[in-house]
Image 1 (cartoon, rainbow, N blue to C red):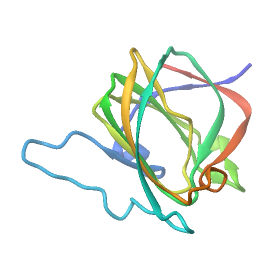
Image 2 (image 1 turned 90 degrees about the vertical axis):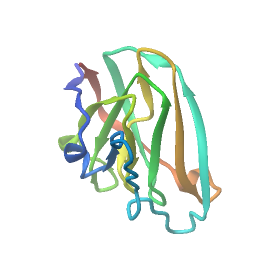
Image 3 (image 1 turned 60 degrees about the vertical axis):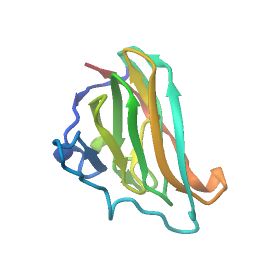
Image 4 (image 1 turned 60 degrees about the horizontal axis):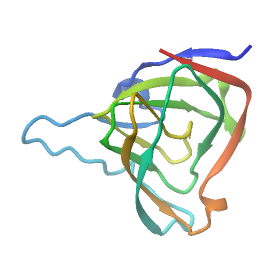
Length: 158
């Protein structure tokens, strides 16, 4: 039987150990990400990609996570309803299951995963979703992303 995690509303405070949450700015404001947009170890190629994701339904069974050890990765919703964010701290080169967290993001919330943060691949709910994704690359996919199979499946629910 898989471990079950109930998705919590995404807040900047709860997500802080893993990255940044950018909520919609007030009228006239212009907040920016700065120090947390980082690249290192040969990740010299900036990339702004666009994704059109098919929706999935909850409950969602998670079996793998990924991370990027050479770049932060920023997901900016362009046309999204709700989306799932699952993260974990690192423990000896793998996701730390004890620190696993699941969040339900609104369609107007952007997320910047800190360099090295384990996260579940992008999943949208309710309807197809479009994102802009910013990260840096070495030009070699095998060097830019790392995958881990979870020791036990995780069921994400509302």
